[in-house]
Image (cartoon, rainbow, N blue to C red; front, top):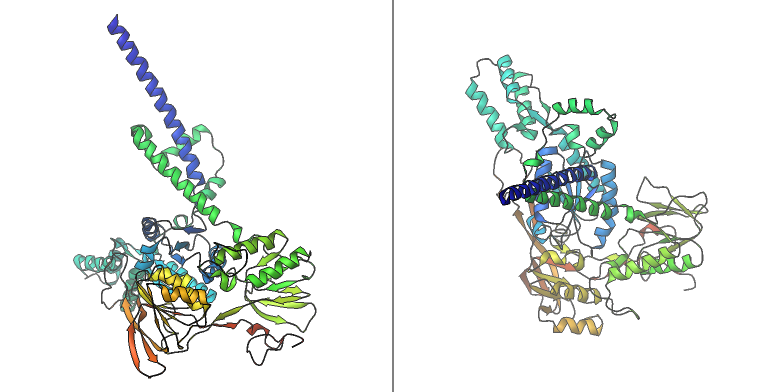
Amino acid sequence: LVGKATRATQYITMAFINTTMNRFLVSFTVIMMMVGTTMARPLVRHIRSTHEFERLLQKHSTETGLPVIVDFYSDGCGPCRMMAPIFKKLAKEIGQDKAVFVKVDTNAMYELSSRYQIRSLPTFAFFLGGKKVNQFSGAGEGQLRQMTSQVVRQAEIENVKLDKSTLVDYYQEMDASKPQDAIDSVYQKCADMTKTTDCVGHAANQLVRRLKKKYGKGPTTVTRFSDEARNPNSGEKDEQKKPKESSSSSSKSSKNEKPVANLQLATKEELMAELEKRMDEEVDAQVEEEEDDDAEFQHGWVKGDFPERVTVIGGGPAGLSAAIYAARAGLSPVVIAPPMGGQLQGKGVDVENYPGLDDITGPGVVSKMREQAIKFGAVFESETVTEIDATVRPFKVITNSTSSNNIETHSIIVATGAESNWLGIPGEWELRGGGVSSCATCDGAIYRGKDVIVVGGGDAAMEDALVLARTSKSVTVIHRRDTFRASKVLAQRVMEHPTITIQWNTVVTEVVGKQIETTNNDGDQQEDSGEVDLDADVTKVVSSVVLKDVITKEETKMDVDAVFVAIGHTPTTSFLSGVVDFDEEHPGYVKTVGR
């Protein structure tokens, strides 16, 4: 009786386990189907780890052939914020079946920034076949569009494959005396050029051109990656087009489908691990979509039937203050400015010289002001004003975007602030993006553990020096006088800081650079061959500066890794030329009525 009872208990237990596992497998299958249908490539993907970036390059190198366009940015970088909506807008225009757009935060992804020699922000890098083919730094929309078009076109041209059987048939037709081992050698050389087992891409096109030149006709290539593989939404579209089938027809069609992994053969631990992995991927995709939604374009200006009453040009504290007052008066102002917030947006140090503001940075102040303006009804247009037509009424405000309509307005408030001044010395322009910068908050983190200099003696120079002292190995302030023009508090902090040294009565007369050869993704140096290597990339960066003592006229050379220029600003009012009068004693400043 005891034995029978034991066996009965075992049977019941096994039945319970089997029932539980079957329910689990059904639930797991349903969840997998739900995950599969919700997963989709985001319009702009935010990279969170080096491994994720490497997997992304590998995927689009071997599975889609799409180019990867990377925006290296920082949250504290004004030009980065200006280019963010442009980058997303371009991603929408190009389409997900033409290119992959991703963003890399240099503060979080320091290893990637160092690997690809990111020395200025924003920097845009273009990858094809897993290798970097182009790169530039700066807030240049035209350059971004041009290089994107080039790499997309290059990807389309290189989306070809030359089959070995096709090459054999070609030689049998054009040169029957060619031995098989010689044909194998030709094909292998082509495959070696792309470091794959097949003759594809640039190497295949090059081989076809050579054979066509030699024999008057080239072998036929085929498309390497199909449209379905390159379009992330192709599967969803196909599912929507499929009519609902009966169970019998679906069972017949299942015979022709690719085999699906047998979940019953997996252990519970393996199933749970796979479920957790896919759920994490779904969450990441949802987060990326949330980050990549149209928040940047919320509260945006839409052309109406009537002219605007007030238009504010400028997105800094002055422009936002005007917008708040106009909005509270019920005038519904339009604020036209890149989303960079003026000079204050680039201040990484705390704002300490304004009453009531404590323990808040420049970007934080701008964000709060923007929220307040929106709260009372202000709308924003993220463009740059290039011209004002004052010959007609209402006025016409013309922006740098040809796709947007001109804004007609009855009144205009100009609050555009100023742009950074430069030294105008040899090497300065050529090395901008390679170690020469005017924004320590934007580019300072890139030179962690490096020797840098700051040129200037005002508040801006002091703030830059203090920001750089947080991460740089050493900071040297170069000033042409024997005293600072900055506020006493900031100057005292700089002079007492252990990492900062000061060279008085000194000017920079030249910035010297050196050429560095980058490495490919495998860490190997570029090989010297007769072929054009898309991965070859030679960059020029700052190596030293020439200093001159203004009293003794003696020149010395100092080894540095970066030069930060902070010598003042020039008003951004060139678009007002011919519209208003300027102050003769202060070029660039608008002459006000009553002076």
